[in-house]
Image (cartoon, rainbow, N blue to C red; front, side, top):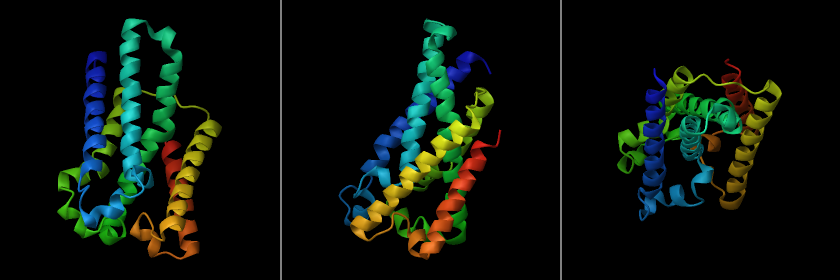
Length: 211
């Protein structure tokens, strides 16, 4: 594809993610049944954090596209480096992780991750926007724009730090409210939760190391 087509792709996907980040948090704001969904903000849901991350990444990608045309490639090396770092260590591994884990649990027992009652508030297209289209968008990015990977030490450290921060967020939410962010955790023993978190990091790390 031409550079112009790639720039257009980044712009279109950026606007899609901006729309989702605005629209989804507004769903059922006044509904009592969705009170738990809205309490605590988006930071407790990995799905919504991923949508925010994708918007940030495609925003940086658009900025990189524009500045390369305006002031030249050599003068924006930091932005290009940040774009590549963001995509390779977080944006691609996280979108793929959400896609794989969500649909695996959904098909095994949807009540563990996305209870059927949510269908009354979230149309099917919203579910797929949050959990399906994120993967092909990231996959297309790997084809359209080759990215330089940082060192394995830096990449795995950044990925591990973000995993750890989210685990702390989940546990803190549980301590505060007595409710787990995702129902799957309520069905696990303490050891099972530790194993789940460990397996999650191993999977996300393997997605980073897929290169």
